[in-house]
Amino acid sequence: MKPPYEITNTILYLYGQITEALGMSKSLLLVKPEAKLRRQNRIKTIYSSLAIEGNTLGIEHVSALIDNKRIVGPKKDILEVQNAIKAYQHLNELKPYSMKDFLKAHGILMEGLVDNPGKFRNSQVGIIKEKEVTHIAPGYNMVPDLMKDLFEYIKKDKDLDIIKSCVFHYEMEFIHPFEDGNGRMGRFWQTRLLMDANPIFEYVPVEETIKNHQEEYYKSLEKSDNSGSSTIFIEFMLDAINKSLRETIEETNVPNIDYSKRIEYALSQLTDWFDRKEYMKINKGISTATASRDLKQLLEDEIIESTGTGRMTKYRKVNKKKADT
Image (tube, rainbow, N blue to C red; front, side, top):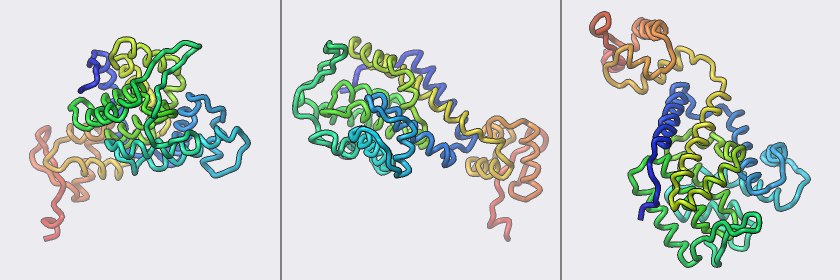
């Protein structure tokens, strides 16, 4: 059964913004940020996700633990960070649509912190906020089937993968499948699902944006609970994803991509006849003059050939075998 939510104008707008930002990252060849930024963003991700859960260690402590340095702090908080470091190191190995791997991830995140890491809860739970019960989760006997249905939804439903990752995050929080660690697992697994939509999300610290808007995050969960639909939460999460992605792009400080990188990327995408306009579309942000210079140089280097004249000129990559004969 498909989880209840609506595709609103806000959702469509934010999805469009995310798609635009992903296009920008692609045009900058930002498939994988430089090592320094990857490390920095991983630290932000781990620190932020655990800080939301009340971990008292600072970002400098997380950085030290990633470097295998000893620190002073509460044992439980140190173990939480060490577990999270290990879990994020295994992120690529986990299959996004596998409930078995989902449980494995919880086992890594919560090892030594709960009695049954990597296993669904076997008791009734509720969420208490300021001495009031704000959410009563479904009965523990319902959890395996509800999670199975949720994984079937993300695997088979035709909606957009990025939107489905938000739905999964909300529904998992609603089901509350574990004794503890539900919040960090919701954020962790959404990152894994986002990576399946685009690899760059491995290095986009969405958790930091959530932490910086923590009150909104919880309110969107509560409002979605009250409405019986994840629509409000989807809108919040898409906004957080968009902000995080654009901040990551800005922080890369990618200089103007030089000629060799531009042509390597463009010719990997343009496999048939193309014109200057199509070349500029692949290399977003370059001027008409730069595109013309690139194409002229490619012709002189006999990397491409052309047909037609003026605005009707078309280009294509030279067939190496043909050129050699």
